[in-house]
Length: 250
Ligand code: PEP
Image (cartoon, rainbow, N blue to C red; front, side):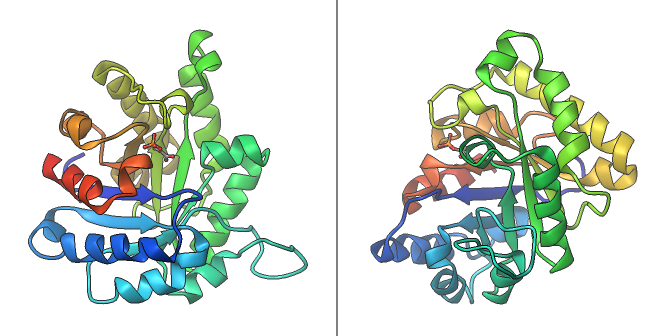
């Protein structure tokens, strides 16, 4: 998309002990310098490492995000973490509606939307994930599913400055499988059209990331696709050397 700064986001999922802080430091050092003018970077470690991670990234353009948030700011929600708490730790982003949350925690579009709204309300940027399952793709439902998820998961207050969409075909996550570049192009063009229809100009400029088995070897051809405004990287973000190699695509 013209005039948008691409975003490379890393999602560590439930990985990372204290010993992994060294990788975060390496990533923070690695994205410093001229690269950061071209590409924006955010790393989402587990919430246990968030506070130390933001401290490690303090002097780096690396931004730190969380992987999920509750839709309320505080209250009797044992084990949950609010968007306000995440923002309080100097984090800047939060992923909502990741397919693992949608599946393992039965998160609906309405809940994902409420979480995104909670994030925006405290000044966090929301990375809202959408994507079809293998069964939905086999049924020819991909675009219908994407339309429903955009309609249901993206709040009215979403703006290009505070919201990022991540297209993550569920079957491509952690599997080593990726859609063809043609299929990614179709999905992203479709998402762009829906976002424009819902949000006008803001939807036209909102970044749409691709996620699902992105690695250094395929990043270049993926980021070259129209309306792919960055990537969301799971497995390949765990090692600083792999994650940093993905920036070679830009
Ligand atoms: C993800 O979980 O957001 C993801 C894209 O994972 P992976 O890169 O490991 O497929």
